[in-house]
Amino acid sequence: MAGTVESEKVDVSFSGKRCIHSRNCVLGNPHVFVPNAKGEWIHPEAASVEKVVALAENCPSGAITYHRKDGGPQEKPPVVNTVRLRENGPLAVHGEIVLGDETFHRATLCRCGQSQNKPFCDNSHIKAGFAATGEPPLKDTPALEARDGPLKITPTVNGPLKLEGNAEIVTGTGHTIDRATRVFLCRCG
Image 1 (cartoon, rainbow, N blue to C red):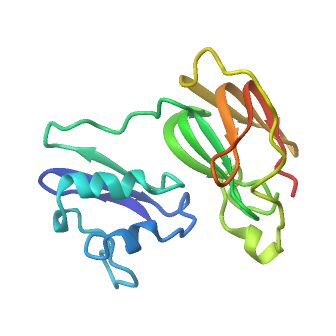
Image 2: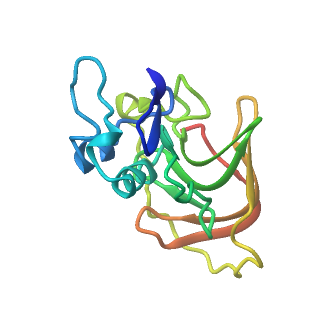
């Protein structure tokens, strides 16, 4: 399911292809994102624009996005591009992500190798029993001159994800594993 729900002050878009069912939306405000609803389940008019924006920006996969019509600020890339290793799960990327001809700010990318929606995670790691730490050993790496900017992600054929641009790779709890301007990340499981 994909599409946009319009309201007077903010439009909310949803991409079922990108959703990993983290449930941040339905747990964050079940009046805006109604769980198990038959028919329309997104109701941006049920909360303030600021609350709708916060809910959308809390979606790790970027499946939920918004467009403000009230003159308020649109979503901006973070001041630090991060790649977070999720315990037994995907890579959660937050940055000025450039993938093919698209630019967006949030994505969950497959690292188990089983997704049918590569490079995005589709939760296949659960059925596959993928096990990988979210807390690998830390490295002492120098700070980057810049920590933001475009982060180009290129999936290689039957190989790793190539990242080009400023990025901090962090553990699930936020400790820095590495800082890089070019890195290859395994997605073979």
